[in-house]
Amino acid sequence: MRKITKIDIITRPEKLEELKEALNAIAVTGMTVTQVFGCGLQKGHTEVYRGQEVHVTLLPMVKIEVVVCEVPVEKVVDTAKRVCRTGKVGDGKIFVYPLENAVRIRTGEEGDIAIMDPKS
Image (cartoon, rainbow, N blue to C red; front, side):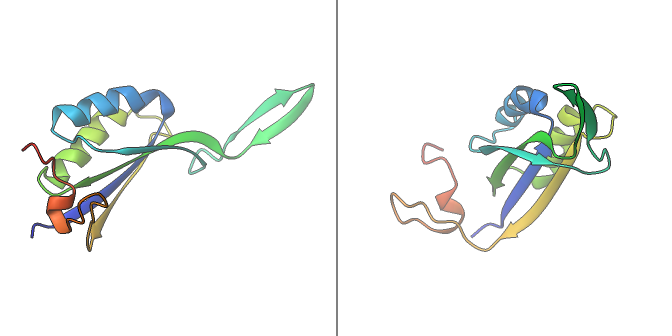
């Protein structure tokens, strides 16, 4: 069984479509996308709402989760860094985790075969 790795990419919402296309181009076919809110170094910003200043500390981001065993982790990370980098605070973070197991519910397949495209 090959090593299975989960990669979480948290970045700006406007980078989502470009990132999806770039990941598909390197054969990453499955992903989970979630709208999230968070703050890091930028510490939010101030907006005026109905005449009152409001400090917004949690900013909208997207979280893209991918699990790979065939595509090299470094290739996924390098692609995400290239696509998501603007050079400004708030570009996001990438987290890499080893996975112990994966199970395809429909067939009961476990391990690396559970995340691979059955057509390949």
